[in-house]
Length: 404
Image (cartoon, rainbow, N blue to C red; front, side, top):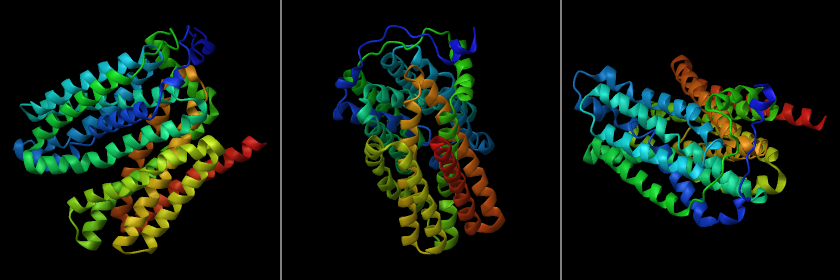
C-alpha cells in the first residue's frame, strides 16, 4: 500500500450530505452527550481522599486511579476514534456509550483498589466517545454553520470538564464515591437514549483496514501542515489552560486560605468563558477562523497579566473568565481549520488534534507544578504566559507564510 492510499483513503459511496437534518435540538443533545462523556474522566479526582479511606493501606494504588483514567482516555483517542471514518458513526457512538455504562458499573462495584484502577482505565477508554461526537457534528452541519455547531458541541464538552469535578465532590461527600459512578452510569444511559432517538446514520468514508487507519495518522501529520500548526498551537494553549487549573487550589490556599471546595467553584466561574464558544464559532464562519485564533490567544495572554498584577480574588475571577474565554474560542476555530482539510478523515484528524492538545495539557500541568515549586505564583504566571506567546508566535508565522 503506498502513501497516497494511506493518507487519502479510498472513498465509498456516501449518503447525501445530511446537513439539513441537524438543528438546534440535535446540536444541544450532542453537546450534552459530549459533556456527560468528558465528565467521567474527572469524577475520580476530587474523590481520591474518600477512595483512600475506603481501601485502607492501598493509598499508593488508589493514587493510580486518575492516571489510569487519563491513559485510558488517550488509548481510546488513538485506538477507537479513528474507527468513525470506517464505520457508521451513530452505531459506534451508541456501542461505546453502552461500553461506558459497563465500565462505570465495574468502577462502582470494584471490590478492591486494583479492580478500581482497571475499571478506571476502562472508563477512560470508553469516555473517548466524546471525540466521536464532535467530528460527527462537524459532518452534519452545513459548511456555513460548521463553526457555530462545533462551538455549541464543544461548550458542552468543556462544561463537562469544568462541572464534573464539582459534581463528583458534592456527591462523594454526601453519598460516597460509589454513588457518583452509579450516577454517571444513569447519565450515560440517558444521553444514549437521547442520541439513539435523534442521530441519523452515516455511511463509512473509507474501506481501509484498521491497521491502515492507524498508519494513516502519521501520513496525515506529515502531509498536512495546517493540521500540524493547529495541533501545536492548541497544545500550547491547552497547556496554559491546564497550568492554571493545576495550581489554582494551591494558590487559593497559600494566598487566601480558601478551601479546595472554593477552588471547585471556580469551575463554575470558568463556565462563563465557555459560553463564548458558539459566538467564536459564528465569528469564524463569517470572518474565518484565523482571526479568532489570534484574538483568543491575545485574550489568554491578557488573562495571565491579570493573574499576576491584580492580586485579589476579583482578579482571579476576571482572569479565569478571560482564560477560558480565549482558550475556547481558539479551540473551536482550530477545529474549524482541521475539519475542512479532509472530510473523509475527520475522525483521524480529530484523533491527532485532540491527542496533541492533551499532550500539551499534560506538559502544562507538569511545568506549572515545577514552576510553583521553583518560585511560586509569579513563575506559574510566567510559564502560562510563555506557552500562549509560543502559540501566538506560531500563529503569526503561519499567517505570514500563508500570505506569501
